[in-house]
Each structure stands twice: as C-alpha cells, then as structure tokens.
Image 1: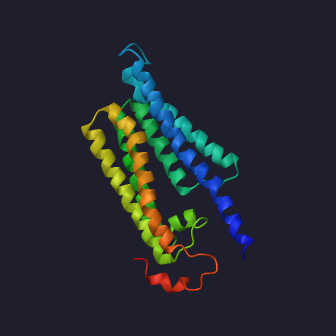
Image 2: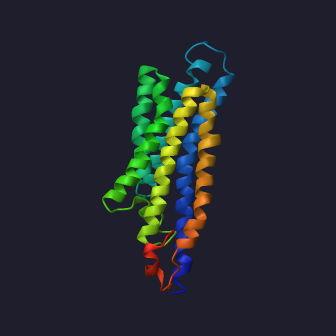
Image 3: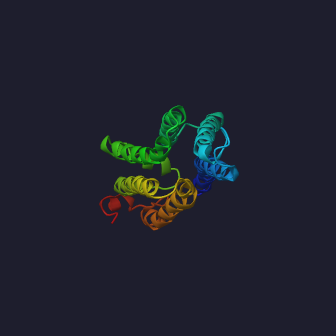
Length: 219
C-alpha cells in the first residue's frame, strides 16, 4: 500500500502543469499582441490600433491550434474543455476575421463559458461526472462530493459568462482584452483556492475505511 501512494502525485504534476500552459499561453498571445499593436498609429493601413483586435484574434486562433497539436503530439487525449474551446475559437474567430466584426470576438468567451457549464451539467444528467474524470487522478471523493464540486464549477462558468457580457458592453476594448488576463484568470485561481478546503475535507485517503459512510454527508 505504501508503494502505490508516491506514484500518484508524480502523474498529476506534469499533467496539471501542461493543462495550465495549454490554457494560459493562447491568452498571453492574445493580450500581448493586442497591447503591442496599441503602439501603432491609428488608421495607417492593415496593421494599426484599429485592427489590433483582428490580428490578436488571428494569433489567438493559431495559438489554440498549436496548443491542441502539442497535446496530441505528447500522446495525450484532448480534454473536453479544450475541444470546446478549440471549436468555438475557430468558429467565432473565423467570423470575426471574415466579417470584420468585433462583436463575435467579444461574445466568444461568453459562449465558451456557457458551453463549459452546459457540458458539466449534461455530464451529471447522464451520470458521467466530467469533473470527477478530470480530477480523480488527484483526489478520491464520494460521488455526492464530486457532484457538488462539479455544480460549483458550472455555476462559476455561468458567472464568468455574465462578467464577460458586462465588461464588453460597458467598458473599452482595451479593458475587455486585458481583463482576460488580469481578471478572468485571477478569478479562476481564486475559485480553485476557495474550493481547496472542500476537496481536502472530502478527500478519502488510501485505506480509509469509513469513506462510504460519507456518501450522503458532503456539507
């Protein structure tokens, strides 16, 4: 029993780190490229402050494609959330560039976050908890605890969708762009930290005999 315990954390560390960079790198590309182009003079041709959102969108699409390709090259199965992100980014990013309409770029995070929430809730409805599948390599909990954990994340994604709608409709393009890095990501990190006590409370250690008794008590 003592031999099995050390091997589990070793698997989860690189997997988690890889997922973080797969999510973060495209956002960094988008924000950095947009802000770099703010130094260009306005309306001086195809590359200007006015076209920054379109160039940043194109680079973002490329970065997401690279992230997906990198995941596949490492022999990893694509996470459902990355598949959803890739599909929405390509469709709405393509519409943004083809129609030269920034609205599609602005609503893209709303669509992605709502689809995340729907995917989580849908997995619960069919009895296959997506969040349990994603995190069971790191935690062992009762099905009821996993359900609560998944519902919390579904609610959080709905909140992110609402926040995105409020920001792009009421603030500047630059503020909306930078909020992807300086608001959405910190909110996600804070939400993870807030959930740690719940995970620690309901995590069932190897060899714990009373785990099943807690099935109905993840308050």
